[in-house]
Image (cartoon, rainbow, N blue to C red):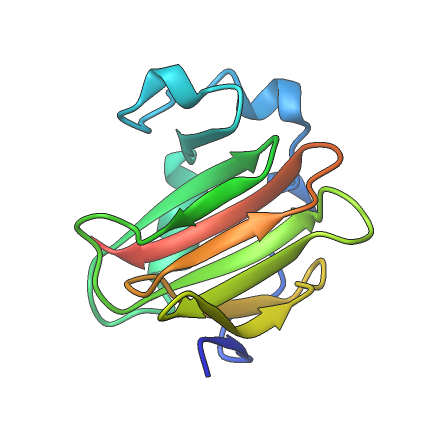
Length: 142
């Protein structure tokens, strides 16, 4: 299982449920700027990072993630294990995160809004059918 809902993280306080415009004011740290029209990763405010850090016994990076279009099959470079996501806006009614093995889809999920989940991001996966901006909070090992 590459996707799993988790319950050890609390609902994100509404003051951190920001608009796309507000999020875009933070620094985009995704290294491939030519993909800004598809994907961006913004540094979260320190207050939010500190709040999330309280729930982990290892250092984590907390980012806002914005997906504007389908993301092709990939693995998250340099990251092993899982990443935790909290989706504020799903990006549409039929957006799916799919996991691949040997060219075959082995798991396909429609991620729910306002629910923490973990994703195995060191295996091939993609995101499909994005109609409008998918906005999430993402947390991973530093």
